[in-house]
Length: 103
Image (cartoon, rainbow, N blue to C red; front, side, top):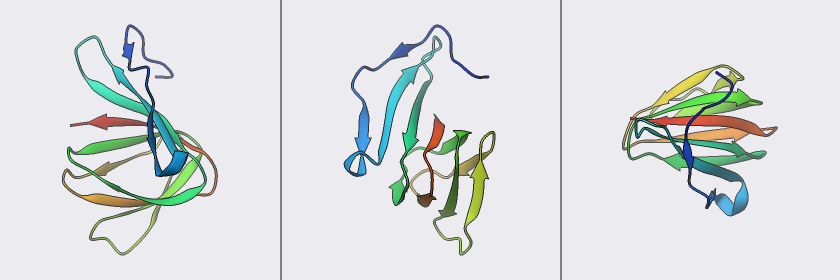
């Protein structure tokens, strides 16, 4: 799916790491919340509350989940799961466009 129809968008952006990650919250008709954003070239560490599925929709990244030793590469059309109350490191050499699915 290349777009979401019939959604509400929170106008104010979520800006993290001095602008290296910017996203907007999208609310679907059934109340489901997602964020749609981009991570600029950088190496960052994110903490999670709820479980997340990070879906790549452009670019690529390397990811290391908390407790793992190896980095894995993900690109356009690929996803990775992050447990709730955890963290992950992400490294991007190019802009990485994503949709974050919560829950």
